[in-house]
Image (tube, rainbow, N blue to C red; front, side, top):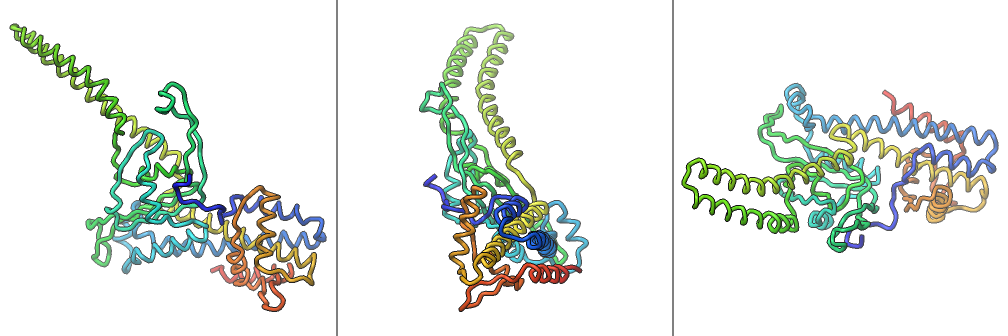
Length: 399
C-alpha cells in the first residue's frame, strides 16, 4: 500500500444522514429540553429541504451543460437544441465543483502513471494509450484494501494464498475522444463525453475502466503455452511430416495434412481461449464495479455532494449549539470544534474522519446560521431563529 497515494484520514463522512441525526439526538437528548428536541428535529428536516432544493438547481445547470455531449442523445440534441452548446471546459469546471463538494480527490498524473504500470492480481493484463483522449478526468474518494484468495508461484500453485490489494472506494472517470463526424448546431465538431462512476476498484485494474482497452496475455502465460503447446506441436509436426513423406496414396496425403493442421489449430485455439478467459473476467468485474453512467452518474454525484454538505453543516451547527447550551460563557474556536466533532464521530459511530471544520462553518456563515466574531469567537443562532432562516432560504430557492 505504501507505493500508492493515500491519506491518513478522509474528509468524507461514510455514514447516512439518518444515522448521523439519530446519533446526535441520542448523544444530547439528556441535555435538551423536550421543546429544544422538537426544534432540533425541525432544524434537521429544514436543513435537508434546503440542500435538496439547492442540489436540484445545481444539478439542472450541470445537466444542461452536459446534455449536448451525452452519447445516448448526442445527435438529437445537436439537431434540435437552439444556439451553441457550452464549451467542454465549462463542463469540466462544473463537474469538478460537484466532485469537490462530494469530497473526491483528483488523481494526479504521477499517481495515474503509477497505477497504470501495475499488473492486475486477477489475471487480467490490459494496455491503454491515454494520449488518445482529448479530455480525461479521474477523481477518487476513499483508499482502502481488499483481500481475496489466489494461487501464486510462491506456493507452486498448489494452495491458495491470501492477497491484499489497495482499492479506490469510489472512482469517477470522464473521457472524451476527438470525433469530427458529430457536428453541432454551430457547425463545429463535437465529441461525446463518456462519464463513468465505479466502486471498489483495485488500483492495479485502473486500465480496464477505459474504453478501447487492449487485453494482453501475460508473459508467464505465454511461456506456459509455449512449453506445453510447443512440445506437442513439434512432436505432432514431426509425426505428420513422417507420414506425409511415406504416403503414396492421395487420401493418405490429405489425411496427413489435415492432421497436421488440426494440431496447429489446437495450439492456436489455446491462445484465443486464454484471451477469451481474460475478456470474460474483465466483463464480469466491470458489471459489479459500475455504479452509474453519463447523466445518471451526474445525478449520483450530486446526491453524494448534497449528503456530504448536509452532514458537514449539521455537525458544525449542532456541536456549536450544544457547546453554547452547556457553557455559554466560554467561547469555542475552530480547532476545538473540529476536535470535538472528530471525537464524536470516532466514539459514537466508529468513524476515523478528518473533519473539514472550515467547510462546514462556511456553509453556516453563508446561511447566517453562525456568526464569527473576532472577540467572542463562533456563535450559533438559537434553534427557533435558525429554523426561520432556513425556511426563508429554502423558499428563495423555489421557482
